[in-house]
Length: 166
Image 1 (cartoon, rainbow, N blue to C red):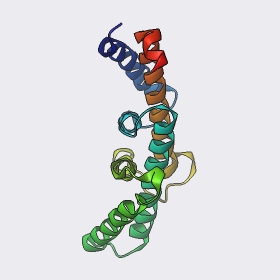
Image 2: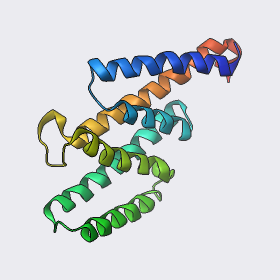
Image 3: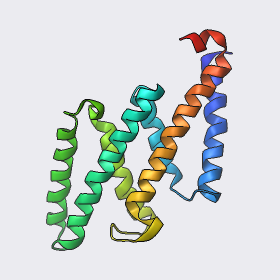
């Protein structure tokens, strides 16, 4: 099978499955899983890409969590929040000095997904329990990364033995 057709089938079927699971069994934002899925591919795919992507995404989530925690207890002023987001952005760039985190956009994906999840779920960084913003975003990004890994495997299976040897 042609690689493009194999990818179309693999990603189409798994995209539908991801959407169904996040709407029913595992209630995390589906858009976060899709961003993590894309992050897997831009981090190179395979086992190494999965590890790099999840580590980078989770680093961004951690930086965003700390940033939002400070914002939560600091002065309620847009300038204060802006300065903290600027500092968080600087930390994300600095984190790229660590080899596994050297693709800064994947770190930014994690940061942005945490902030977006907060807005989409109307929760804050101090929400407690299993709906805690950091846990939900980390779980969604791990789930999406795993879907990326599985979609890559399925695409290779559908393209036949020649692709499996690559």
